[in-house]
Length: 103
Image (cartoon, rainbow, N blue to C red; front, side, top):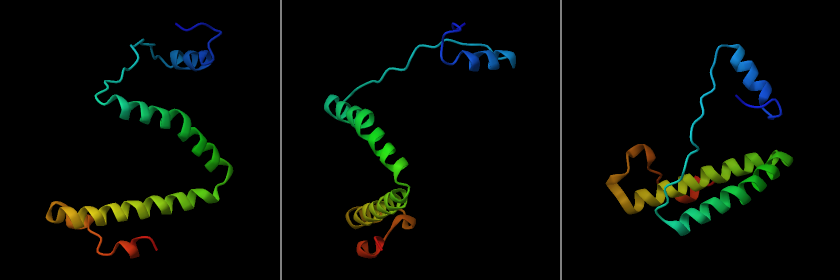
């Protein structure tokens, strides 16, 4: 049982009042196959992503711009995949013109 000084003690009490029980589990561990890629991803995840989230929280107009940029990038990616992989891509993913994908 957590101590009363724990920041989430009230949550534990609430859930215990509903009949739930607290189960302690070991924390997850990452199995790393490519060390450099893993370290790069962790740096981006811990330093860059929080900054982007704070920026988007301050400027809601950027959210629409970011969504359009992601849609455009996905369409270009699908176009390139269909151009280089041909019949391996399902027809629903094919885009015929990459320039019109970003409009």
